[in-house]
Amino acid sequence: MAGNQPSARPRSPHLQVYKWTPAMAVSIFHRVSGDGLAIVGGLMFLWWLGALAAGPDAYAAFLACVWHDPSPEVSMLHQITNILGKVVLIGLTWAFFQHLFSGLRHFVLDTGAGYELKTNKLWSTLVFIGSITATAAVWLYAFAEALNG
Image (cartoon, rainbow, N blue to C red; front, top):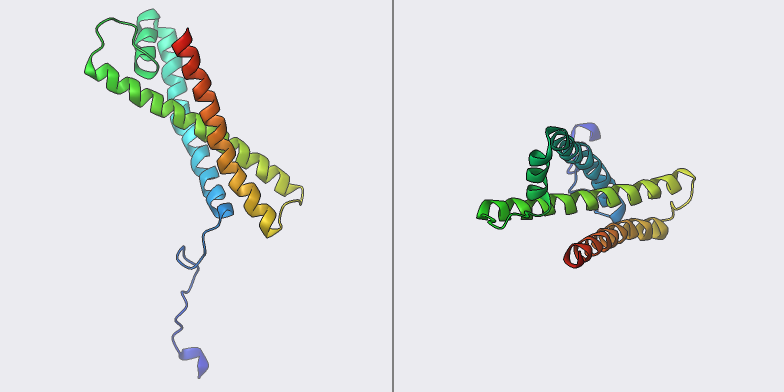
């Protein structure tokens, strides 16, 4: 009876069965970046909107946390929140570009193009390279403007 013998194969596919490919990584990061944009980006937007509506002091406190603190007495807490604010903004920028380029890749795939293995791997790799390059370009420009102005 061949049907009663236990099989060494798993009953359903698991992550250790599949060989990781750039296309799998792009798919996972597309979902993660979309969730990050929705949750973290939404909370940052609401915080910014609330600070804007609450008046100049609340808006100055928001800017002190996420961009720079113009007061002459900058405490250690403000320096830490300032660095964390920039890390969150850079992360949101990367998530935006990752989600954008991945979405464009999916749009092209929906037309029926790019399903060849080499082409799919190339486009998946270019999504990561493009998102990191675009994020670096935006923040190099922003920091250069902040230093000059």
